[in-house]
Picture 1 (tube, rainbow, N blue to C red):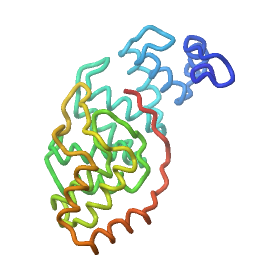
Picture 2: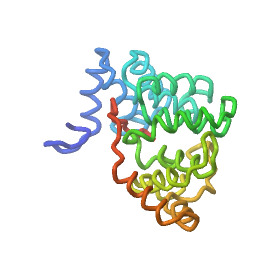
Picture 3: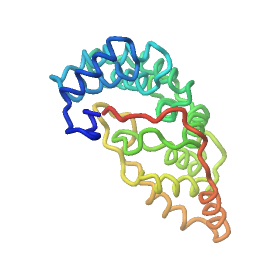
Length: 238
């Protein structure tokens, strides 16, 4: 309540005090929130090492994918500890195995670009498809395109799957609808090609290559698309 100012004046310091009481009792949601506040320096002096400590306590309990992803991001960016891409991949995979669309998308990026794993377009496509069929947990992320954009790019280029302009247009349309309309700005480390076009630009390029029937079919698929359930909603901690 105090963190969000729900019914009371917003007070990060007081909110932190109550969260610490819960975190010290081992509640993973509270531990993750304490880590988030240390990372942001809200209600407490910013301390990335302390943030990692609390993310790890929450992640080690096994069921909170937001904490697992926060810990993995910290390993990627070297926040509060040395960079360790192997550990990052391990935690993303743990979160992905619990249906985290953010972690699935990151694994897709890793396989597409050969980042801390062997480059594998088919494996990238598999992870993008898993993530794209859900509501994305971290809309507006500043360093990575949405999975809807990423799978659209795979269909458009024929990488990891057969080239299919209809499916590509469908996914670019959905990516634009979900707000993936500008190239990402890498945060701390370059994981993606920032020269990629936006979803809207990619969609417009495809329109010039497609028949009216193909465009109509892509629009129908986009209208009829329904997301799979998402187990948890992420909080963007960056």
